[in-house]
Image (cartoon, rainbow, N blue to C red):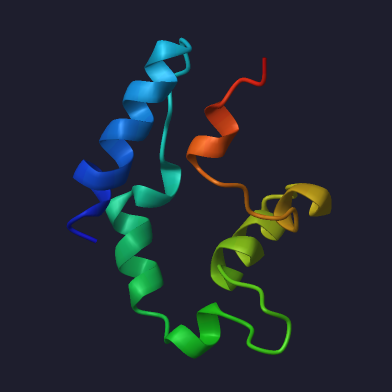
Length: 85
């Protein structure tokens, strides 16, 4: 957790700004982090379906986020910012 900002977020933000992209990290809100960390790990990850972030997915469903967004595969952080020439 302590390495997240200097090792990943600062370089990612720098890369994004080079493309005039403003990044936001809604799941890094301290209230969300504290709430999620109170949930046992077994309740956050489905071993049988290999699906993570279950509490966040449930919240998204209640907010009527479309299923295709809730269940889409994870993409690499920096890979999204690379422009193919």
